[in-house]
Each structure stands twice: as C-alpha cells, then as structure tokens.
View (cartoon, one colour):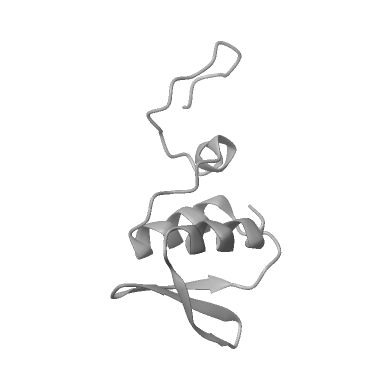
Length: 84
C-alpha cells in the first residue's frame, strides 16, 4: 500500500499527526497513537496493525487484506481462489 493512500485513509477517519520527527510520523486518534514509518510502500500487515492501534476500520483494499492473511467477510467472486 502506498504511504499516501494510508495517510488518506487515516485522515478520512479523523486521525491527525501528533509528531513528525525521526524515522516515523506519530498519528493520534482520541487517546490512541500509532507510529507510521516514512516509506513509499507500507507492508500490508503494517497498515492493518496501524489501523488496529488507532481503532479504525482496515483499509478496504481486498489485495491488502488477502496479502496479510486476514480473512474478511466480503463475498468472494468465482474467479478468486479461497484464502488458505
């Protein structure tokens, strides 16, 4: 997932930047905080962990969820193989 897509998702759910120093940007939402690395690409598992730490819904990209090995409740199309 691109960093800008993750940032857009966090902002859409009300998260704000608390600090922007060092190797990570610290995002906050209410009393929850999460460090976000400053890389162009964020690993799917990291993006999901950041969303969990802030208490917001996961990004809705099926490829992101499937790559992290997380089962989702959306219906599968006939062309998609089932998750292991």
